[in-house]
Amino acid sequence: PSNCENGKQNSGRRIIEDDYLRIGIPCRYIPAKFAELTDRKNTGQREMIEASERYADAIWHHGEIPPRGIFAIGSQGTGKTHCMMCVAKAVIARKIKDHGSFIEPRVIVTTFDALLDKVSSDWSRSSEFIVELFTAKWLFIDDMSVRVNTMNNVESSYKWAYEVVKRVVDGFWSRDPGTFGLHITTNNTPAELAEAFSPPVVDRIRGICDTFLIENKSRR
Image (cartoon, rainbow, N blue to C red; front, side, top):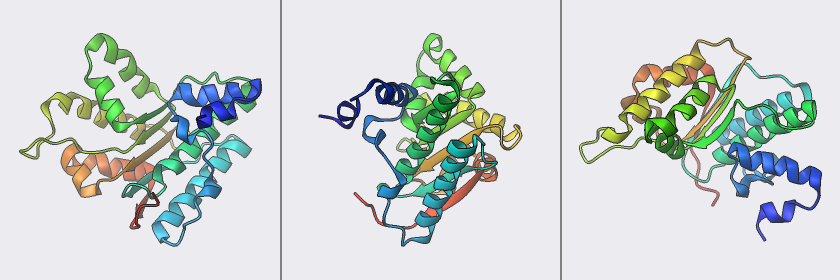
């Protein structure tokens, strides 16, 4: 049985796990815990894990939104997504703790590819999602990447989607710290992202978030 099937043994836990899935947390990360990330020898990785733990703790125990998000840069299998999902779970669990059910609609957990595909679809389907992006209180983007063609230019079908992401970042930049949460992971370097999105976008992400560069081999 899957992790999701194993976990649904009582109604209370099932409600929480259904909320995790509904908001976009993949099934494999439903049982994820920070304690599972035992390899912390690399400085960047250790700092990312510890910062994420502090972030989740502030949300769960105090109901506070820390003033800065997390921007994790590194190769696959270094715990970036694991940490992000643990924080997202803390957000949802706190909302359930406060209200008895998850009533906060302004939380988005998505891979970057899924975000691009939704924004690039026809307007009748993409417009609602774009509004959700601009009004999100919590935005978790996993694996922010650069889609280029053979000429090393952003694929034409995604140019509008990239422009939406730029404007979303600008919108977060204009908000007061402690009123929103932005978490991003990427396998690309800041220079590669800057070439695709423009340097100001990456600078603003780094201005909003604490940046962690993980130079470590995959855990997978």
